[in-house]
Length: 204
Image (tube, rainbow, N blue to C red; front, side):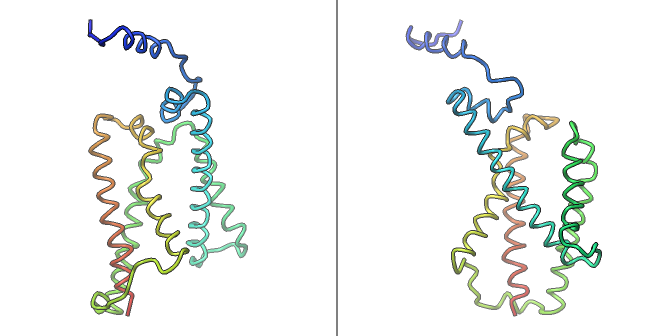
């Protein structure tokens, strides 16, 4: 048997082994809080995750309506325009297994990539490379700009609350470290190109 040192350490380990498990249905992330801080920790983490999800839903709703406003297809009512896609998302979210949607994710990624290619091409046609010769300052000018920057950072790199969910859903969970590194690196360079590069391209 493995030596755990003093009798005090062995007793402590025995107490940890005899701890009451978290309630059935508790997520892995919340289970960590349960073992670290007990029921109070579980409650706090669940409330924080609920708040995070609500804020993400609001952010997606705002993004959807901003995209819909620029589309020629509309019902004539802004409220109905946002209700329709929201209902579709809600119905899909009620499915116990949404893995079937993974087949369509590549279509969304290709559409997103194509959109930015069109935007960059338009900037090159209209302004050429003159925007990259400007001396514009891209630092936040006020608290509103800083808040927008912080929101982008949290959205792009806020992987911690979801890392255990990703790990559990992966076909090969041992590759979670590599997948996380590659994902964050791609996000880093993509955000530099999109936020700074495109902004300078349309600066003249």
